[in-house]
Image (cartoon, rainbow, N blue to C red):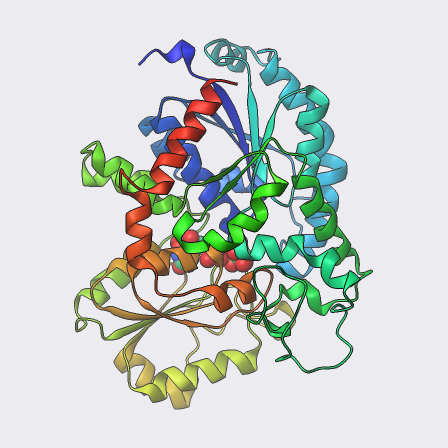
Length: 452
Ligand code: UDX
């Protein structure tokens, strides 16, 4: 492989698990093709990502860097305050740092001598790939004169819904005048007759002048300035909506499911299984692998797996209702109950404290854990069903595994995902095969990056 002829790309995700994972998977796919990738995380997530060393050892062209998110180290980064605080801080504090960082990478200069020596091995930075809710990074890349590509981590359907919010407002569909959440919504072309109010992104329940609503409107509009869009989806899954997005972008690369594409690429290269699992992992939390041993003891297709991703919080009432339902169902269950799952004003973690009336049922049939290797769990033959919050990564992982999904969408894009998801495991497999659309589109992306 002629290393010096490979381009150098910066990948910069929004600082949250569900955003970092697909971006890091893309990083591995690009490095696998020999492309140099600088992966930029906020300082906290840089340190939490304990797989960095293993990934750098696996992919010599993958370089990790960190940047301040501008928040004090003791800031409680919970979702209720996190989005507003982090978004403001990224814009005001991180944006100028990013500009400096881009300039140094574009010109191959670095103040630190060790970093300078490493930088000398790298070609000048030629492209930025950033998240769908970080338009300050588009501004920075434009200022420095580097082409920018955006990877919104949502489905095409959700992304299209967010893009149509100004239209929904214009058509007086937003804000809602009454509480009839089952009313069909017009104003999202291609989804007529399908979307009810309850299926719209959660921000649509806010007043239209709410800062968060305005933030999303602005971000979605800014993305159209990018040179191209990368979507973690595949053509057969969302073709009708993709045709609505196509006129807004000069190029759209649909290269999902990314996690499956990475696995298939690694398998194609016949790498050992131990190294392939190192490559596939991109977790900010410590995985508890005891659940795999527990799953081995369960009957084929008998277990319901419950996971609400990395951000969703439950009220105490919701938590207990799920718990009662699971125990009463008489079905074995594996439940990811994160230590921070309860709303912060509702006290301590309840996961380890089993309510007395549920003790026997939980001990007999349940396995509760803080964080699991989710892709492996979904692939386990004992798992027969997936109770999910419909985060887009989990949805694609569920589709890929071919398990039945019971959807409990809570926030952001999850409502749209849960409405649109079908049984598409076979289509997903076709898309990452050598003759499939995602495989072909990734090749095209790599080629275009080389031609920049
Ligand atoms: C966030 C938003 O909430 C979601 O709506 C959006 O689509 C993506 O960004 P998150 O809530 O964390 O993501 O959900 P999801 O997209 O499903 O991502 C969670 C990831 O964490 C998945 O890749 C899943 O495999 C992984 N995970 C989850 C684990 O590895 N172990 C676990 O125990 C739970």
